[in-house]
Image 1: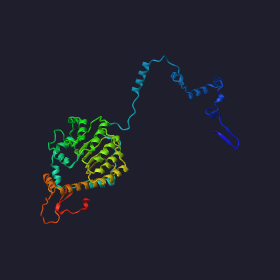
Image 2: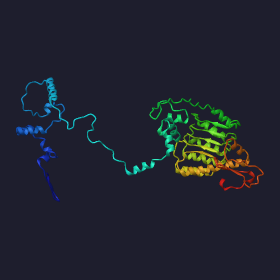
Image 3: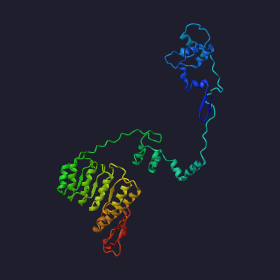
Image 4: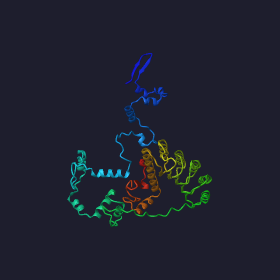
Length: 421
């Protein structure tokens, strides 16, 4: 081991020769003659050196890289064939080591693994799951056929107990196919080929001219999925939309609508008081411009349905959603809003306000046409509707429809109600 002596001014070290060989003091051996050093070694020391040194040279044959330890004289030249025969003969003549336990077919050798018992909590849970169905149900299930059990599983919604063919056959009451029991294998069914949706053949230039001429026959304009509409045509449509008094539905889904078109569309919405439905889904609008369009609806307050989901930015963010919520709550005519909202507060507030608008709309509709709504409800077989009659002695005649959650009152018995404000 090296011994190191240290003082405040000097530092000396005493190292052995072996440490110097693997240290930094090898430069003094660069000029030494290796042959002179080897001539001073004895035969035993040379043999020891040969065992320690292995020349790292792959070009040398193994006979020169490895030290030969055999002291016997060679018996003759190498015969490879005889050597292999001798090795095989020696392997066959060498007896096998006897096994401690001989192999006997059908016997278990060693210790058989037994799984540990489940924990006590799991056992208690399994005992709680066990349900006593009673003698009547157990007898019915034990005598039920395989097809009846599959139908029962389909009715109860146990989809993991059956495959798709079994499930649909049970729902359609077609009977189970042959070979599709519990152990059956379901083959892949050929998917139904539906015809491709035809392209939108709407003439863009012609419809722009009809909107500009305020054609009374054009009530619904559908530009969905029309590609390569120029900015000039968008501008002409929005300019013509300002003074149009007949168009009620405008569909601009998947037409490449971008932020540069929003300003003119918003100005058209501020001037147009006839449009009821606007669809700008699947375009490239930013959240700020969606807010701009919803804010433009507050000028005329005539639009009933606005759809703007699947835009460039899927997540609007908390600030944008709260701003949209505030704008929607100021709009008394909007009935449907198609946007993907992330926060529950915004979704709940918007849904509550839209339901209030729907209730108010039905309330006003029945006020203007007292028998119209009741006739529609009767034609659709909606239960629990009582038709109001004039001349009834009751102060307030009403009927509650649980399907639409709307209070229908007689026009002569109208009173201010805070629930619809």
